Length: 321
Ligand code: FUB
Image (cartoon, rainbow, N blue to C red):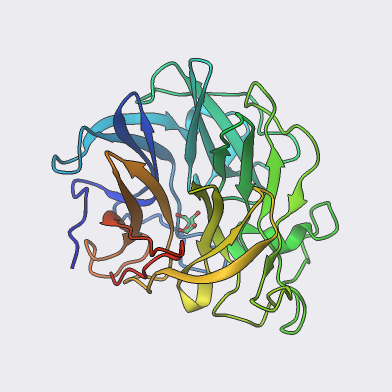
């Protein structure tokens, strides 16, 4: 079994990027067990995170360096609780940390904070990104410089409550025979602080070109979108939720449609699974998490890394954790 990358604190949802020749990891920071943690429920209240740390690695042989707390919820005016899976991006001398949190109305939104260093600290914008909703942002900058944000997640992530375009607290996931809800995607504006245009839904199709249905647990989009490009093909990967796979689908456009291709990672110890994929020093890596460090307590997770291997046809070999 792979060893946890970080053991002095609990970490999850690792978004890895290469900045300034080093590998930087932007994970969630799971809190140590504490008496005030909300009881586990279907909405993920137990994932009661309040801050972010950033880590860097010179190479894959030396352990990550902890750059300390780079953003705390007390410094984010619009956010009330649950700082979940973040991501980061760079443009024009500025580093951007994108993060979801529940606002003072009980609605998940995505915010952004900026820094002149990939290691932070980051200063939050006063309000969340207008038009954003749900959680698990992934910001992908294409070769032409256009940036896209992918986001969304069911249940605790509230995606099913946005099917009418506004927040409906009674919104339900579609029935088993209906098309599943896809991740959302929006173009980012040049300054990386807002959406440039409407939010769209990404469609994920099966091998017959039909939309994956909400009852197809093995291929369902649940949360944890990640986008990367390999040999000119766009790879959208995500968690299937209840069946606990990291799945992937490929396409020829960053906004889809994507065709389901298979699994990147088999189920790990713990309920959640979340990842990123990055090329560093000539190899491709999957950063992911499980709950081995805490003996299986899913709100006290640890990040790990494994080499990712592509087959000649562009498919990805499934990693067994
Ligand atoms: O870490 C909190 C949530 O758990 C993330 O946002 C989800 O992707 C899942 O990993």
